[in-house]
Amino acid sequence: MARMKFLCDAERCIECNGCVVACKNENHVPWGVNRRRVVVLGDGEPGEKSISVACMHCTDAPCAAVCPVDCFYTTDDGIVLHDKDLCIGCGYCFYACPFGAPQYPQQAAFGGRGKMDKCTFCAGGPEPDNSQVEFEKYGANRIAEGKLPLCAEMCATKALLAGDGDVVADIYRQRVLKRGGRPQTWGWQRAYGDKG
Amino acid sequence: MDNHPPMKLRRRRRAFLWGVLMILTVSVALPTAVTWVAAQDAEHANPRAEFWRAVRQGAAGFSTVRGPQANVLIDSRGEDWRLLRNGPVAGFGAVAMGSMVVLLLLYSILHGRVRIEGGRSGRTIPRWSLFNRTLHWYTAILFIVLAITGLSLLYGRAVLIPWLGLDAFAAYAAFAKLVHNYLGPAFAIGVVLILVLWLRFNLPEKTDWQWIKAGGGLLGRGRHPHCGFMNPGEKIFTYGSMLVLGIVVVATGFVLDFPNVPQPRATYQLSQLLHDAAALLWITIMLGHIYLGLWGVEGALEGMVSGEVDENWARQHHDLWYEQVKQGTATQEAIRGPQGGGAGTPEPGRPSTV
Image (tube, rainbow over all chains, first blue to last red; front, side):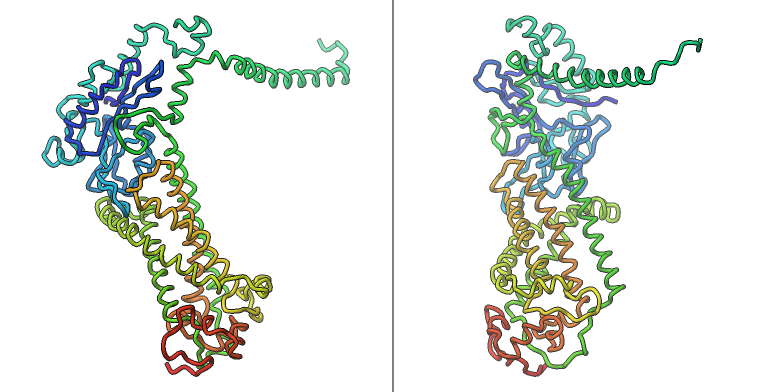
């Protein structure tokens, strides 16, 4: 069985935010909720890098570990999903997640957050595949249709890769080989100067 | 082959010592040298590696998406929070509360109730005003409701889900969370009022130290030590825990209860840990308070129910206060509480009409 993964190639991402738009449109994500975002690091400085980030579908997911109602589950593809019927909107997954993936439709007094929403790897939720009720709660289920997440599919520079971890790793490895030795290699500049 | 004369003992020992010294020298010198060389090389460190190291450690960038910490790619402090909450906090909390229950059971079995010496006199004296009793039970009931709902959110997954199932527990947990979040601020009012209005009952007195040295008369069956309106046990554990733990629980509770005033995740993590740890300790201490009030000390409960206590109970547990009441030197406030008892305040020592 495939182990689904996202990978964002920082050498390719151009911060076009196409993935964010694709995700919002495909999943009809409500206003104020962002399942995916692009973070620019060292903005405006030489060597600026951009990375698109969403739920990383962790193997030992912190969100699942702290959920008081145990509403998270991992599919056979290694995708971390949650059941909105169980979710009580306590915010613990948001405290625990390193990537800021869990999102809430409200931020009201007395702990009013509403049901948590996050990237589903375009795999819907526990409702029947591609049913209306699944779409309304979780958005698209492209995985059930044999497709990959739309954010990666729409990425213009193919920076964002999604799919079977082995295939994604192969693609990235080929890229690294093609680009030649990268300055990321420790000691590169020591050996070859800053021209690398 | 054994015809060589055996190596002299002194030489063997010397060789051994030199060997050990050499091993020690090399094992210290080699890593030190490598670290030193690496430190000299710091200016040539790969800037890319440094860049990504900073990102991995939570360096902020820029994002067009708005939201709390949306510009931070990764902040793995949540993993620390998870490990602490699910590990030591939940673990020690369960052990503390469990130990307290066992301790109280053992105490009640081995020592039994603290009976009123000489039985009831049938005469009562006023101790708590209606206002103070209302304040006590308002705070007490909210404390119990918040403790049950709070413990459900911490331990429910381990204890209640196997019993209720996912769906039923989620329905209960949603209700529990709502109750906890709305009643929390109401409870805070009770805590603050008690801390302010009952402060003067709980100030240290000269007789306190003797009471503590005598163990408060809890152990053994000797003469109960001298004591004023409140005993040092009540001052330290009941009032003191509210002063320290109560304020922590209330302050962190407000942080957690109002996501409309968004905080960084680290603030929520710290608040949640302090809220849990302080609340668990507080519940543990309050188990002792509840036991002593409801069962452990005969005649104590009625002071908080009818507001009047038996004279013999007062003489046994709070003799100095009792003397003051008898001599009429206890101020009206110390008897009836700050808000007064309304009309019909009985004279001290007046036989109960109930």
